[in-house]
Image 1 (cartoon, rainbow, N blue to C red):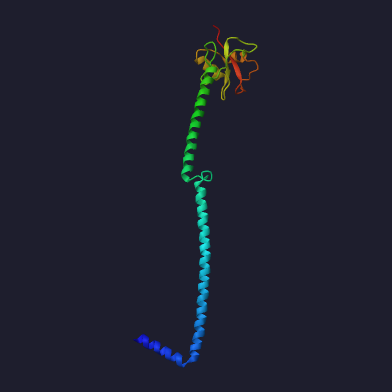
Image 2: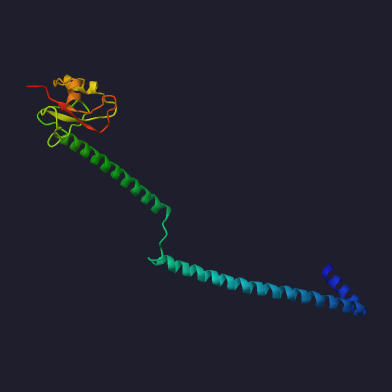
Amino acid sequence: MKRISLWLCILTFTAFNPGFARAQDAETTERLNKVEGYVQDLLAAREAQDKHMAALEKEIADLRDKMNQPAANNYASAEDLQKLAGQVQELAKKQQADNDQIVKTLDKLSRISSAPTGGHRPPPGAAAPPADNLTPASGPQNGFFYEIKSGNTLSAIAKAYTDQGHKVTVKQILDANPGLDPKNLIVGKKIFIPAPAQ
C-alpha cells in the first residue's frame, strides 16, 4: 500500500511540475546514454575476448598435433634424462673394469717377457730383459740384464742377487759395465749383471 501511494505522489508531482519532468527526462536520457555506452564497451570487450580465446584454442590444437607427431617430439623428460645418466654411469664402470683388466694383462705380459734367461732371477721388482743381442762388448758373457729403478744403488742390487743365490759384488757389476757411475745411476738404463763362475 505504501508503494502505491509513493508512486501516486511521484506522478502527481510530475504532472503538476512539467519542468521537473523535463529535467528528469534529460537526466534519464543521459543515464541511458551512459548505460548504452557501457554496454557497447562490454560487448566490444567480449568480442575481443572471444577472438583471443579462439586464437588460444587454435594454438593449443596445433601444439597437440605437433606433440602427437613422432618427429616433432624431440624433448626429453626428466625420467628419460635419469635413465640416460644411469646408462652413462654403467658404461663408465664397464670402461673402468676393462681398463683394469687391460692393465692386469699388460702387467702379466711384462712379467713374462721380462723373465731372465738361463734360470737366473732378478731381484724383486726388477725387470730383466732377454739377454739375446744385449750382451755388452766387454765383460763376462754369462749373466743377465737389469733395468735400473728409482732409488736403486749398486750395493742394493748386488745384495738382492746375492740373497737369491747369485753371488755378485759391486766391483763385478762395475767391471761388467764400463763407464757406469755408481753415484749417478740413470733410471731405465739396463746394466749387465754377471753370473757367478760355475
